[in-house]
Image (spheres, rainbow, N blue to C red):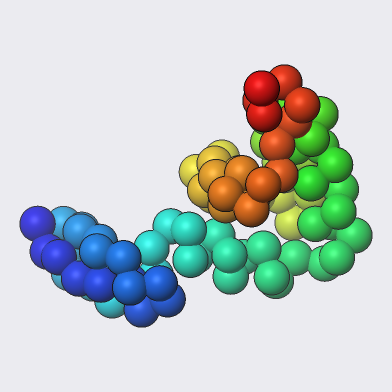
Length: 91
């Protein structure tokens, strides 16, 4: 296992792939991906997440370009960390 610090947030990361050493952690990578999305896509995804986790994941899957499941899961975690959740999840 190779340990390193995320260049974005400074969190400790670990990988088994030498090529990944120095890469951003999943949440920093998700933040960068979020910034690259068009504003209307971001609004649509956030609105879908507020209706439920699965709805949010489906909105990511049907966005243009589609966001594949592993990346969508990280993006969902990033949006949850930003406080975007459904009413049922915030209870």
